[in-house]
Image (cartoon, rainbow, N blue to C red; front, side, top):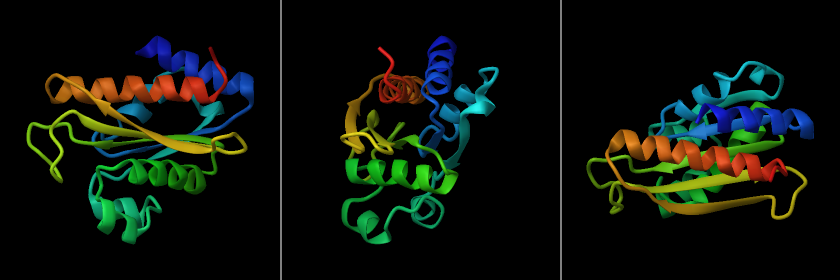
Length: 160
């Protein structure tokens, strides 16, 4: 995963874009993976760890009404988390991860249900989210979610 994180940082530098992250189930693993790359500070502005649902609203900028309507494990929530991270961190590109690492069910979703949201200023479409169905234990689900977010960042930065 470190090679992919390095490619993301290099692509951001090349594109002149700044990055931010918002994380729930991964608890900072995505930000830690990005900042393990030498030179990440030139493009990585920061990240939000909004593990508790109420923090997605108060820290992450997700509308409380949205959380009440769709819950924390939803594509609209992931999209709003990414937009909130970009706004709060002053970044042009952001990704967000929310979901269920397990072992139990949350909001009716089984372990492995993850949503990766993204935001990219000035691009079309500027925001979106995808549902991931990940397998394995808690650690495997978290690592797979981070890998997917890194791939999404790489694509958003125009890298092939």
